[in-house]
Image 1 (cartoon, one colour):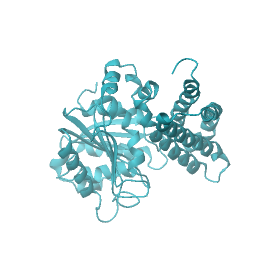
Image 2 (cartoon, one colour):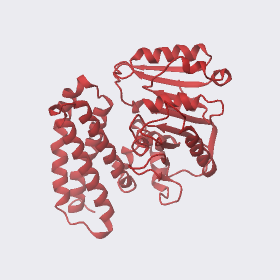
Image 3 (cartoon, one colour):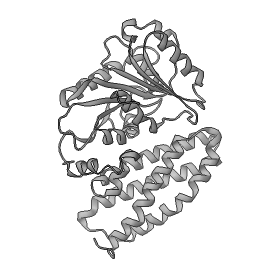
Image 4 (cartoon, one colour):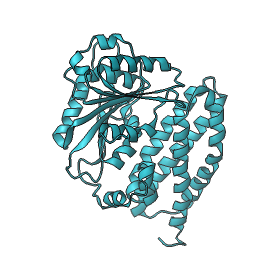
Length: 363
């Protein structure tokens, strides 16, 4: 391509506003709190038209066959991002604006997944899928660029985990992984969620910091919080699978999750024979009786990174404070994060800090 190439012009017309759209929609999702929705809609509105214009410009160009994959991924991602805008901007006219906003976030996650294959083709997309503080890390960028992303057992993978399947998992192994010992992060979705979507909350950090992420899907509509535990055995098999196929640091196996996933990180992670070395629940429920049922030896010195939003409307902040005090009294090593502007959503910006804590580099 050169400066007058219509393909370059079409790409420039679409990709920057598309990345911006995914970013601002993600920002809206992170700050979604029922009273905030009208303000978020106002913030999002100016970013819809540039994406719409980019889609039109991109569609006016005839793309050669060898760039067909690029075209498909770009158009699919842009269409999904536009659906996310439309859902979010129409939420205020719905009887339940919060649910409309949550549906919008689902479309934005799909837009993120759809554009990821382009990261290997375009530097701006490559940098987009890194933590912001590492987007100028030339050594990392070069390492990613030189990696063979077509190798087996690297990149984004799914095991019995299409959107209509339960009990499977999605995972990510950095494309530049070369056999070195790395941490394993098992990240669990919230109630009625899905591992295929939740994977994207952790991919940037894993790609930036060289970690493997498994994002499982509960066997039922949510995790086994009531009745028999039908999910822990599944989680154990996933950890064993990762250990069989990659060089996992046995001292850095994290179980984390959002909402019901965070609560289940207690239930599953506190088992005496659980394979997890660290726990990081977010926006989780908690009852002190849970600790009474746990082997005390499991709790002593157990690292727990407990994060919760002061605005959480589902599980009030006092739930997290009780968990902090109870685990600390039982001898666990608790890192407590009370986030003032967080409602009942996942704080993606915490991931880098969690990774520092997991790898003993937290200041």
